[in-house]
Amino acid sequence: MTVDYATYIAGLPKILAGAAMLLRDTEGRVLILEPNYRDGWALPGGTIESDQGETPRQAARRETIEEIGLDVRPGRLLAIDWVSGADRPPIASYLYDGGVLSQDQLDAIVLQKEELDSWRLVAPADLKEYGPPWFASRLTAVLHALENGTEVVELENGQEVPR
Image (tube, rainbow, N blue to C red):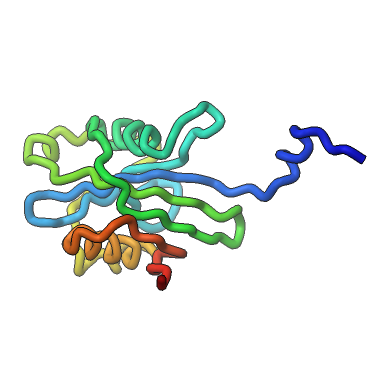
């Protein structure tokens, strides 16, 4: 029996995909957002609309515009994190460097009120207080890679994958 291509594709495993931006201030603090639809904090970012032809880089930029009102061009890819979930398919999460924001940019932030309650700048040492364990470990690995000029970091549930 020959299976047509559409049936073959429909039977393949599924994953979700997301993209986010790491934005910092001149003191090295990380900009995080408080969603109103789930617990924990997040970086600016969200679901990649792959069904619309959107790429991870495009999604990171679009979501940053939508969520905080700033048009920041994504810099280099910092990490890819494979995040498992009990009630959903795994998420492949792309994280881009959004650079250091000026005070004028920080003052211009306008939150997307439909999804977000607040934002703040958090020192790297304090990130563990703002979300699930993978959130802080992901950011710690990425900030370490930025400091050391390391290439893209491969993560699973926020933990660096040994090579």
